[in-house]
Length: 220
Image: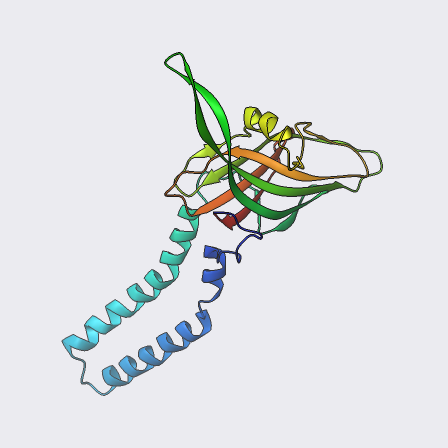
């Protein structure tokens, strides 16, 4: 299914964590503590009061630690210091924009048991713009890839890129040159194999030869 623009940014665990109002949690703890101390001071301490005194700190700790654990799990497998963006961002000096993601297909021939058969070759493209504002420094990508929410990685599909170059309707490609030269803007489609049917979210990962990474998240 083609899409003209990337869908709305997906809410990250960090954003959800920021929605927790820790001041209200602490205020509730103080009120409960004062109530329990009031009961104890009047000599009417009960088993229920003791149970509450034990459970309240446990519940507070759980409410704070669980979101932190979820955030840690979500970020597993990413390099430390990796910057995650949605649609636009920077990788070092490079300015990167993800403008459009599209599923497509074209008709081609494939040899099956010694006979040529017409098949539909599916692919996925991400229209990307990269600008190197430096006047002197060139920056080299070591890889540009996609990762879906099923854990599958997709490297650039060069054979499909060659086929699309000869497309009669024209095809604007990002190009295979991994070097971004000073004061140069490059834009075009980065071509990948078809994405797995069950995948719903994608990350486009740019990595330079120095090991720096930037990741762009969007819905399939």
